[in-house]
Length: 179
Image (cartoon, rainbow, N blue to C red; front, side, top):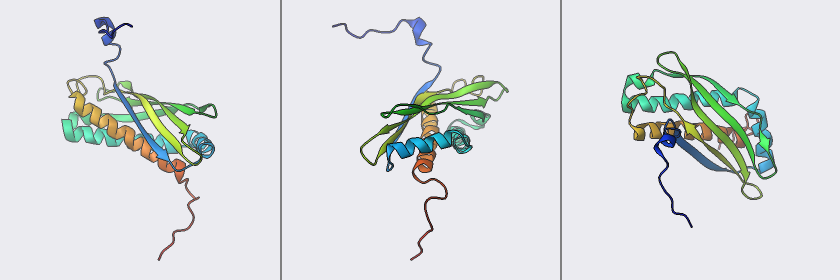
């Protein structure tokens, strides 16, 4: 059996331009129903709105931790592929494009949003991907721990919003009961 060894320096740069991020939650929803709802959400504005809100939340945390220059970015677009998969897993490719302080467009997030059955009436919603800080002076020299924390805040915010939309679609919760 071979032991693990260091990756040559030329390869190290290939994975240091992003932060690996992920989150997962357990939904109280049947897999087939969650998959059908994800298909609907992928085609409407809700996932775009969730992306904008989540990116903004992450940047707000970054500004608090690193100063106003770090916040000179905004989400320009969110691209979502149609859901694909089998009876055992469904995924949607997701990409966030943002505008840096210098006006350049950059990919802020490339990820897979996945649904996996977790029993008869439960489904796991997960996101795994790579998050990039903005290029240029506004993103240079930022502490990796701060960037990781802000990326995690953004991803968790997005997953929570998607989970809410999958479990509680608008208009289906019924009337509120007031005691």
